[in-house]
Image 1 (cartoon, rainbow, N blue to C red):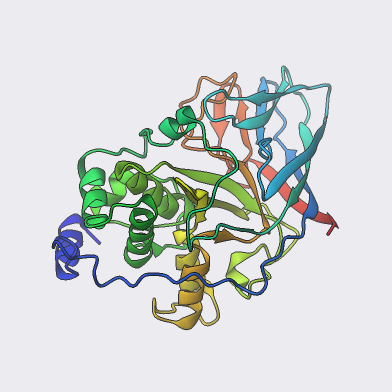
Image 2: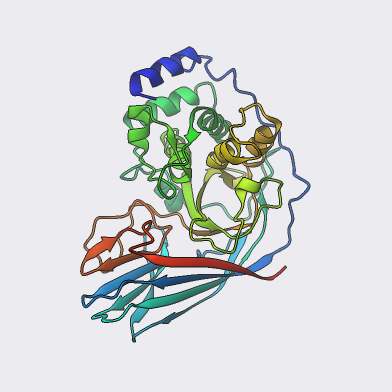
Length: 370
């Protein structure tokens, strides 16, 4: 959809009118019976095989978040490297992004690495019926960080204009976030042909009118619009670990091979509720891939997913980080939009982490206990 068509489309839906949001229904809180408080322990292993080369080689592997939450806890990290490579765990200061950084100074054979994380995860739900006393209020500096723009997530210009129109008539952060979530679900589309998880270039999406993409695009759109509306919000980059138990085949990892199971979620902060998980991208994934596919927005399965994914997440997923504009330590290459895949560099040049002929890696998860 081009920009002019996009503007005409918004006008036809009443989006530019004062009461343009009145057509959107309010999501009721519906607690799925399958949610569980049980912790599950997984071992996540990333195996990397790099091409043989006589030049220096560097490798960066994202690690599970070290910040304990009520739905994820890191137990330990270990690794094994070939040919005497040196490795350290690096934590980037701004977002706390953790990664293993390995270096082969002069690799003459094909370098290999095995990186393991053991984590505990469980289902998560934030009750949205009324504000609750949160045990610890979020630090003001953290909230300022997740209100700021990034290179691909501007919060001025068209992004701000769209955010203010979506949230017109809403005062409470929870109501504003709900309106943005519903708008993103209604106006985006998952595009299977997009490489990996997408890029998350929100300025391009809104100026071009092309709202198609994958999770890193669709959920980045929610995050940027929320920030532009004054609501702290952040992407959560991670990977699916196991099949879904919520009845959605499309919302789980359906084999032990997880090399293409990376998934970005999102969350926003509301006083009295804390950080609230949302995933408009997975609603669109249900529409495209569930059952016979191409389900309409009013399909009961889509409506169930839309209700569930505003305030709840299933514990079949592991979070890596919330980072944007990642400068890989030791690299002179431009910053990455985010770190959700292993990255490697040969003789100072990054190789395509989505191209298996150049960069061979496998990711597997093993359930250790429930």
